[in-house]
Length: 138
Image 1 (spheres, rainbow, N blue to C red):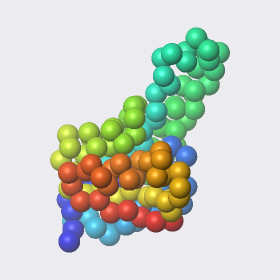
Image 2 (spheres, one colour):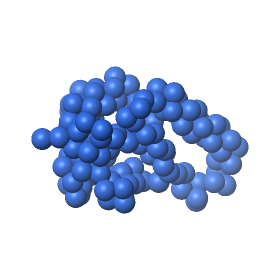
Image 3 (cartoon, one colour):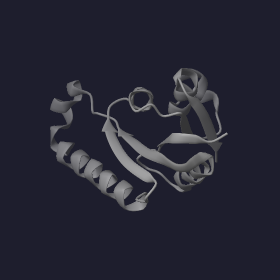
């Protein structure tokens, strides 16, 4: 089975798992299909602003650096790079629905006890996506 629009969520601190997920997405892509690589930068809660006002410029600079690195590292004719702000799982699911992606390829760490209590972006995407999801293990 192949797909025409594949969404590949990438953590802002991406590593070799990101490249592996992109390779898997390409192997599942229809000829002439398109891949969207997305990274979601979590917003700092507003109630923290008074406490951390002095580091807000540093956070904004780091977010700018992530956007530039993503555009540099994932630019290809069959790839569109998108960065969003918000809650990662919700932003990924919303983008997949809004842009009618037919598959999500997401890298995930081996689950541990922390995932039973906190959850993870990958597990949230798997549970709630309205399209096919391919999980790439490290």
